[in-house]
Amino acid sequence: MAEFQEVLKQSALHPKPAGLCLQYGTAGFRTNAKQLDHIMFRMGMLATLRSKKTQATIGVMVTASHNPEEDNGVKLVDPMGEMLTPAWEDYATQLANAEQDDLARAVKEVIQKEILLNQRIVESKLETFTLMYLYYGLVTTPQLHYMVWCQNTKGKYGEATVEGYYRKHCQAYVQLTKNASNRTDDQKHLCVDGANGIGALKVREMEHHLQKGLQISLFNDGSKGKLNHQCGADFVKVQQKPPADIEINPGERCCSFDGDADRIVYYYTDSDGRFHLLDGDKIATLISTFLKELLTQAGLDLNIAVVQTAYANGSSTLYLENTMKVIVKCTKTGVKHLHHEAQKFDIGVYFEANGHGTVLFSQAAVEKIQQLAEDANSDDTKKRAALLLQSTVNVINQTVGDAISDMLLIEAILAVRGMTVQQWDAMYTDLPNRQLKVKVSDRRVIDTTDAERRAVSPAGLQDAIDSLVKKYRQARSFVRPSGTEDVVRVYAEAETQESADALAHEVSLAVY
Ligand code: NG1
Ligand code: ZN
Image 1 (cartoon, rainbow, N blue to C red):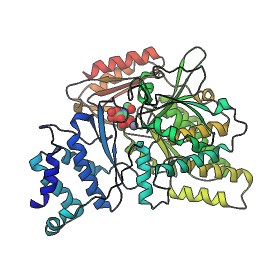
Image 2: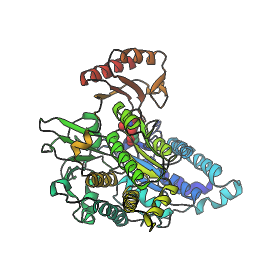
Image 3: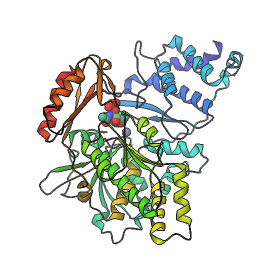
Image 4: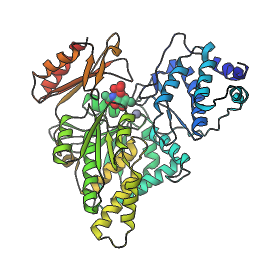
C-alpha cells in the first residue's frame, strides 16, 4: 500500500493507545482529552473523505460540550449543517479503532465503498486527496453548523462568517422586538451564565448588533471559573438549582448555556427563595404556542408539531396535547432523532428537556409565509402575523439547537407577548422529577423500546420498574444506557419531590 506512506507516517505521530476502543456516539467522540490525539487526526482524514463523497464543505467541531474541563470531543458536521449521517458514524468508529498497521485497510475500505468503485483508480488517485480547509478558530458548535450550511448554499441562507451569523440573527431579533411596545429596562434585562465556555465570549462579541434591545449581565464568562464547573445548562438542569457563586435577585430572568452553547435553560427564584426552572419543555411550549397563535392570525394552514424525548416532563406533554392541541411526537434521545422527526412537519419544534433544540420550517412553509408577508391585499392582522413569522424563521438557527439564537427567540417572544418569566412558568406546572446515574459493569445489557420508555432486557427489569411506579401517584420512570458516559441513566417523576426521589432511588437499585 505504497500510496498510504505519507498518511501512515503522519498517523504514527498520533499513535492510538493500544487496545483503546471508542465509539462515535450521539455526541461524536467524547472522553478524557488525553485519549483523543489519534482520534483528532483520524477524524481529519474522515472529514476529507466525507467532503470528497459529498462534494461539499464538511465541519469538524472540537468540543466536549457540557462535560468537565479535562474532557474533549470531536464531531463532524454534514453539508446542510446537520449531524453526520449514520453510515459514516460507523466508518468513524472503524477508523478510530483500527490499530496502526490496519489503518490503511480501514481508510481504503471507506474509499472503495463510498467514493471510488474501481480499484485501479483507488491506487492512482489516493495521493491526490488534498483538503482545502478554513479554520474558524473559536466558535460555538451552532455557529459552525450555521457556517457549514452557508458555505454549501452559496450564501443563500446567510453569510458564512461569524459576523454574518450575528447580523442575520440580531437583525431578525430587532425586527421582532419592534412589535413590543414600551419595554422597560427591567424587561430588557437578562442574566446569562456562559458556563465559562465559548458562548460567553460570543455573547460579548454579538451584543452591539442588538442595538440595546437586550441588556445582558454576563456571569461565568471564563475569566476565572472552570468550564462547566458548578455552572452551565447541564448543572442547572440536573441539580435543579442556580449556578454556584451567582447572586440572583428574586424574580430576575436568568439563563444558562452549556460549554459549547448549543443548550439553554431559563430560571428565576421567587420571593420565598424557591428556584423555578424553565427547561427545554417549557421553551418548546412557549415557542409552539407563539407560532400557533401567529398561524391562526395569519390564516395559514400549516401543521405544527412538538418533538420531545422520554425525558420530557409529563405535564408538558399533557399541556401540549390537551390544551394547546398540537401534535406531540416522542423519539429516542439524541438530537439527530428529534431533528429527523421534526423535518416531517411544516413547522417542527424540537427540544430535549435539557435545553437542546430548535425550530424547523419546511421550504413550503417558508414560501407561504413569504407570500403572505408580501401580499399587498392581505389585511393588517394577517400581514403583521406573517412578518412576525418571517422574522422568527430568521432569528432561529435551523441547523441545530443553538443557545444564542434560542435566547433571542425566547426574549423576543416574551417581549412581543408582554409576558414575564413568571407568566411563562405558569403555563403549566412541572411534575417533580429526578435524574440519577448508575454505574454498572456493562450498561449495554440494558436494551430499550418505545422511544426508550420501556426496557426489553435484562429480563424482569421492566416488570420491577412497573411495580415500583405503581406505588406512587402520577408516576413514571424509565432507564436507558447513556450514549455519552459509561453509566445507566434513571429518570423518575411523580406527584411530589419526595416520591420522585424515592422512585428514582428504588429504580436505581433494580438496575444493579
Ligand atoms: P446521554 O448521555 O446519551 O444521555 C446526553 C443527553 C442527550 C444529548 C447527548 C449529547 C440527557 C438525559 N442526555 O446523552 O439528551 O444531549 O448527551 O450531548 O440529557
Ligand atoms: Zn453542548
